[in-house]
Image (cartoon, rainbow, N blue to C red):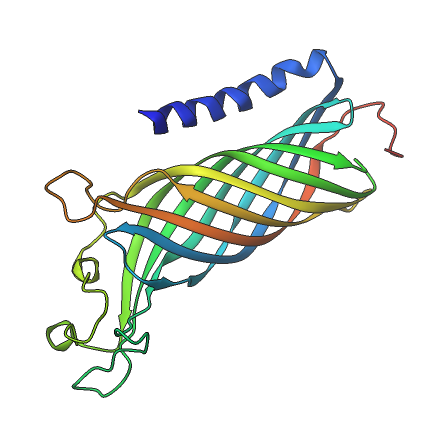
Length: 253
């Protein structure tokens, strides 16, 4: 229940922001563009699964509506539609923290799962600095929703001959389990810088973290995992250009 309340609170923040335009300096500006970057991800399993970061790409489209400037804070809402490669990569070690060697291939055992999502973040975008020409700092915060399009496994051993005897972590159920819950939801928060050029557009660089509130697998008492939520670190760049501009605003800001 707490998860739903948190998502509702973030939505309320996003809906209230445009209504405050009578308090600050009114803006009516719409910008659209493209975004792309890199994703480092893992899954918070309980029981624990030892992992390194899974590496993937992210890219898509974004739209931003600026509603007001409240004192020095530039207030906007931002919507994105992204394709993202997330997942987990297992760190398979023995009791001495050395790689486990498969007894058939004589190679260190490797396993990773790639989860391909379409993701829709709906974010409050707050910025400070040069509004139309120059540099500004910004933060993003809001709910994110996703849907699993496909999944794939990469491994260098056969499941029937994997070396479970030498593993320090005996948890292997996830290796052969397909994702049960394709719909995903959580909270995204990020910070970055934006450089704007008149008649050219806006260039962004952002670091963002996503914390999943849903689980990949069932989490009831009869299920194997009590928790299996995703976590992503995203480094991304974006370019936006203006579709609608506020009239009679000084471009020196």
